Length: 269
Image: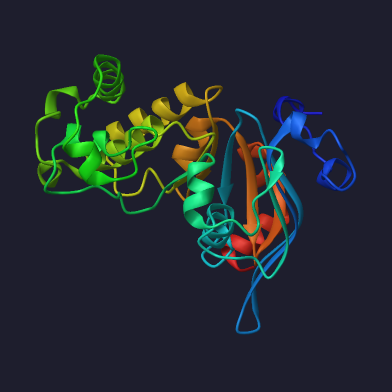
């Protein structure tokens, strides 16, 4: 067995799924069972059993149309699955609304950073303070010293403290990515769904983003959707390869890159 295989041993999700293992939630924060998402006869997602462990950093890769975004849509409640159950934090969230799922601890950063251009970096962060979902409540109410300190600690962590009073419209693309991730962290989710955090970043920004996600590993459960293999390599995490809505392969990046099925899916051979 190689060193990579020893670090990321094979998982038989079918034996650890909630319907089989009553103690599944001791290991997994998120588990999908018999999930399908069908649109006009096209099956975009078809997962028999798939789980993400507590405080794990997991990366999902795959060619365009592999089902990666649909996976995030189903977990976050944006899309209702056609069949199956989404288990999260010991409960069934399949029928919950997108807002209910967010309040219960699933945070999502889309590929395009979601920030408010007219607000400063700090004001954008204020909007994400836990328990404050109303923007007017956030902007026109005072916040505690601890909340302000927490915001600045996070901004310092991602090198945004110097632009705390700068309107977001003047931030670089990389800074906007970090602001979106920082806002997500501030809202204290149990699960972070991060869609293509390295997209459009410089090499230096990509490295810093990888460092940030690695620092968060152990504090949050993180699922990263990514195409940049150099960035994925920096994360040194278990990689799941999706193709045509199904799990094609899983393991360390060096391992899955040598998988003939993965090579064929990416190269069309």
